[in-house]
Length: 288
Image (cartoon, rainbow, N blue to C red):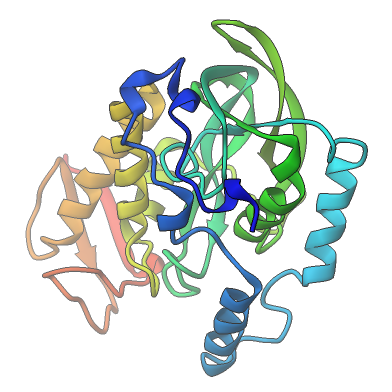
């Protein structure tokens, strides 16, 4: 077995970010180091839940996007830009980490999910890179000898459904500009949504699935950004608003947070935890 497959992240990888030593999950300990065997498990669970056979992208379709994105690049070191859950849990073997900022893109909750931390009844949202503005994230360098294998794992994690387009961006670092692979939110996807902050917060506050609540996903991103020292005012504001709405939903019998809430036609409400609510049944209005 190749040495890089069994060793921990090298100490040298943290030369530019020594404060992250011990805070990034080792690849061998990550639950996101996805394999085809994991896909077999997911397929079994999907069949048991009555989902159609095409509930996800096929291995062939996913692999075609990887081959197209990496043509002519498999024999070279590859930089990968992380802006969400990959930042502290990349699940791939890397040899260098640098903070970086893509000009012309920002992180946004603009992709709908109906599995994992969402469901058809209570869909949630996940983050993607969207045009406009900028955001801080991390660059990971994958050595040339590992690019083929590690990108296979990365694609299995990120390209389960449609919604992301692999692209190469130029990013600014404290050591100059670098080109890196990133996953951009796909406006042509059926999962794309364009919501204002209030609607986004409401969807996150009520989204829940077999993995857990959508709010927990936002909590983890907010925590990661704080730990990394990255300032994202939009995510901070969204985090505050989503929690405010979540607290209100847990107190449906009264008024709170400046919003009066009524539940019309709601059949069941669990006031202690996740809320099996249909968003259309909730009426929210500003308190007069």
